[in-house]
Image (cartoon, rainbow, N blue to C red; front, side):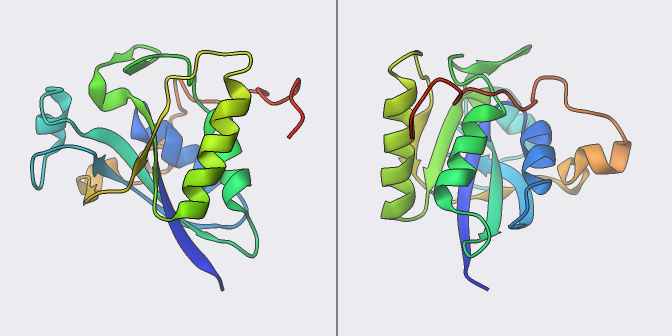
Length: 165
């Protein structure tokens, strides 16, 4: 197995995690917080919007089954990357769109795909080096699997139909 890790923030982490778990090649996911200044933040801390953290999903994947490019393309498909500091009804910096890369290949791939989308869209997604990841509380992990509910603002969109990649 050729494992790697990448982190995605795209609004509420429940829906993002739910959709990434369905991808072949994704080994595991975990929701948490990244990109802020407070050590060991809680959900309540992050919800204030004052910690600088984004609700983030850690994606562990097998590179022999799914590529960095496939994962990052999927990330852009499952949220509205044109929204600034929000996703649907969720508003605040904690809901911003970010790709937190763990290696240069992920960074280059993310930059390439973002540049392609910018030909037709305003892309509010930032691309940042991964920082300390703080796992969220247990009741946030696998939320939709445990509750039987469905994501309210995350679904797959076909954003790549008019592009040559």
